[in-house]
Image (tube, rainbow, N blue to C red):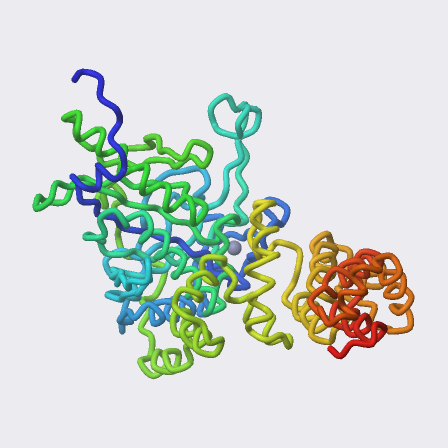
Length: 500
Ligand SMILES: [Zn+2]
């Protein structure tokens, strides 16, 4: 056949074996930069957080930031790495306007953390991701192209450089190549970045927000025939969300398979991921290490962390996310499947905080995975951004438990919470929502319902207690759902002289 359809993903991963690898940059949340005392606050006026060191002025001398070294060691320890007893910084030479020194201070063949691992779960199975290295470096400035339609250099009339970000501490975490994941390669990549983000968040060394660039990910992908040597890899950049990590791997697997199927050759290059189309386009052809002419940084002393200090940092590590999740699952009494749905909904912390605010685990889970997950899904936002807080949900559940709200009214109150109208108690009084359990007020409605439905009332008098449901319904209607159904039923039976 001359016209062939593009191969499907399932077909491709039957015939080729993907090997992936991930390089992740984490911007540390230190108060000052990596090699100078400049502040690191996000969003300041351009070029107001700079000094001779981070501007690379002649004669300026850097000093390494101890808090950044400590944060890097803690990340390494959390990733089960060995911590070097001696390591150095190196100059990575390249020329780009947002890098004032014309080199980046990084680490090369003597990184501070090596040979670790991180276990991630994919479809209930544990996959061990080997970590090659964790090293320290500094961020570059930011270039803003003005005058073009898209903010890109193409068509721009001028370019502005902001050096506020230059010199902010970065930690780069590099995995070893990850073979053997087959069709799951995209899911494994996503699970790894998710778990890594959660680990680092637990350490409180970075806010790890992909959308703000404090967690950035490059994804390496190659394909080989079963049993053959690994193929040439490409490096996909601009992967700015967890979902994009997964899509980028998948799209690159499909693209490379199409090239190989057509008898082509994969070029080693960086590629750019596009959120809108979900595919990648070529960037520059990939530099090799020799292009960067690395050499040891002569202006900085080597780092030799005291083993006693490292041991102290290790013993003070917090409980890591996977163990934490396992403990919560036990405390909440959830099956693996139920826990998985909590994880998939991104609701672990929310439920944890709701329970801490006084709700039962079952009550917390019910609202977050039910009504609130549905609303988040409808409006396309993360569950945490849906508009309700754990404190709101705990309060709502308490009002239900106290009989002040029934399920239907609670949903209406929650709608107000999500709309930003206030706390559940405030919305109850503002909207006049609340269960009417005052029997005096209900008696009139009950009598009215009995008078309007004499045949049903007779049935109940004759002992057909089940018929009371119709009268309860009538009372609920006249009270706009605000009556307590059990109280209404008891009242009806009492008025008709029937034992409940
Ligand atoms: Zn500075």
